[in-house]
Every structure is written in C-alpha cells, then in structure tokens.
Length: 251
Image (cartoon, rainbow, N blue to C red):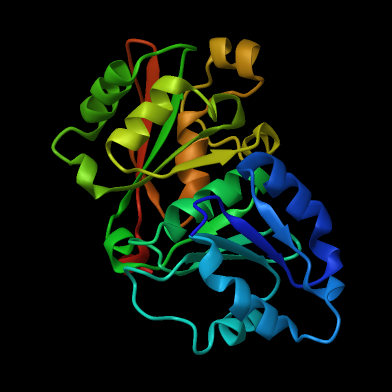
C-alpha cells in the first residue's frame, strides 16, 4: 500500500484543486473519465487498497457510495478525506483517528485554505483552541513553555487544535511542538484575519512585521467561532498565546 496520498477527481472541475494538492502533498491523481467502459465506482474499488490515504474531490454522497462494500475496520481502512469542488471544507470521512484522516484533513485545509471538518469523539470533547504567534526561529521548548503558561491550570490534553497565521505555517519550532503533542495546526491567511481584527491590544511590532494588529487572538477566535476568549494575548519569551474555550453547550 502506497503511503503517499492519492487524489480521486470526480469531475474535471476539480483539476485546479488537484494540482495544488498534488504539488503540496506529492500525491497521485486519478481521473476516472479517461478509462472508458468501466464505471467510476468500479475503478475506485480497484484502486482503493493501493493507497493508505485518499482525497476525494467531490460530494460526500458520492464518496459514501464509492465506499459501499469496501470498508473493513478502522485499523486497516485507508484514510479518506472529502474536499468539495469549491475548496471550502476538508472532511475526514473515514479512518479519522487511527488511519490518519483527521491529520490529512488539516493538511488539505492548509494547502487550499479550506476548513477542516473532524467529527471523531476523541477530538470533539476537547474544548480549547490555542492561537499562537511567535518570533522567527523560536524553538519548540519556548513555545511549549508559553502555551503551558497561558493554559495555567488547564492541560494541553484539553486543546483541540493550534491556530496561527500563514507566515508561521512552516515555523520549525511550532511544527515540532504540534507533532510532539499530536496537535493539528490550523493556518489562516492574513486577509482572513485582517477582516476579523479581534484584538484586545494592538501590537505595533506585529503590525510592522505581519501587517495585522495581532495574530494569536484572532486566530483562536476564527478557529472557534462559538468560543469565548478564555485567556487574552499572553506573551512569554517571544511567543504570544491566546486561548479560546468552545461554548457550544451554552448555545
């Protein structure tokens, strides 16, 4: 089974998204309309076990029908993420936790600017989102110290996801910290954050270097739209952290 993800295009309309994902994830692209005389569902069944991870660009209903009769159990099924043709939502549909579809959904979302959709129980019960901004080259240890400082009596095991600005998407220390704690990293474009300037105290440094009034607070609030700011921007040793708590139970 090939460890690299594969992309299944339901229609040629998804070619542009597929090109971005192929470049970013080193993925193989399947175009079933090129093989005449064999249904798309049959072609998918023939290819299903060749890859450990799948990205289906199309409707969720189509993916569900394609999977009919193919799934076995959560420990052996390939991970499958559905991305709509507008690039809005990356849905972890199958083998979310064990198979890696949850992590793949975040990778797909980062690549095309989509919203990751994760429904597994392990992640759903975690109420905290941490927004983070940091100076370039800050090591994982300093990021961890800042996050723990901001969380106070709350634990990292309560954190559902980390959120940051696109400029920090590949910051080595941040990626190492997220990997160390198995935390997904959600990345927002600067334009998205500029349209939602939810900042307690604007920062001149962030404005001059990033072009925003702040990073950590708007990142956390955009990532958790039902949430409330639990910990406003807190700075420690070059790392700015804000914590938002999901308030879905109060709706």
